[in-house]
Image (cartoon, rainbow, N blue to C red; front, side, top):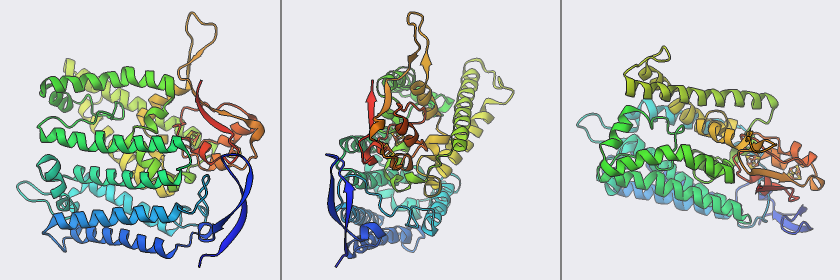
Length: 464
Ligand code: SF4
Ligand code: SF4
């Protein structure tokens, strides 16, 4: 029988304190019997995947795939239900600094090394995942996903198909867990449904179906400069060869960063993209939720962040200008380096190593938004729009380029520090709240977690 503890915690809704009883396992991270059963299903699902990956089994992929995915899905959803079913609405991060997974312990390091290694195989050694050579059939993990790929687009899987499928499944399962955890907070529920929709329908299923119709691969929500290859010759040629739809894709890609991005950021801040639409942000918000407290809040980290992220944006712009100049004039070394070499470096350093290997592999060590905070050129572009002001000739005062800000009711702040602790972008929210200042920071992705975990209702996300 679980031990019960009586504690006083503030109630988010009406600001009155009330006594509630909390099962002791919520304070100690001890698993209940049913949680252990649910985790056993997850482990079995992973085991089936491994058996196929290491080619102890090579036939009947369909049965193995669906068995594995079903066990993984049922187990993780059941575990989420058991984890949060008895919790009170509000802060649910008990024991976060005492668990090896969430406090850079042994489990975190094992997971970080596994994820980093998986990304290295994915980008540079897909043959170890079972990617077929010329004229061969897929094997291993990629062969396991052949039935799903055949169903969606009538072709065998590739390493990118497997990655997309696992990425989408993770966002769905962890997204449902996240929704259940923050079910008292409408903002968190709606934006997580949005993230799941954009990843599943727009980033995964639609491009696969388009490929089955012999149309170019195109993710309508992946905007330049995040989509760094948008202006590469092969991509433009592919779109131009696809007729009317291809021209529309080209048009869509250009107006997305020239018009949609500034207009939507003016009204809603960068959150419309980073916390409601983007796949990288989607994974960080869902699968990365247990690690958000690991972000570095120091001034030094803030300085490094500004230098690095704006350097990546400059690199993306220079590389893209070089590629376009080469396309239209034939001059390939406008910046003294061949445009092909420049784009190759960008793809290797930023597109693969930073966004994938470091961006996700380091979740358990550096927090969930390493890529968004330090490396994403789209986040840098959105941050400039969100943070900065312009001087319009007909106005006396400078005008901000975005209406978004987090307002603070400083008089209510009890300096508990929850907001700063759980800000995944490393913003010291408490310092603003104590002074009652509005929070206008280029890096704020408007996830709203600072507000969701504040026991005093001090923080409000607003478009003023
Ligand atoms: S300040 Fe709040 S809304 Fe902004 S990134 Fe941090 S936790 Fe999210
Ligand atoms: S604003 Fe931050 S420090 Fe102040 S009460 Fe809310 S969570 Fe605690």
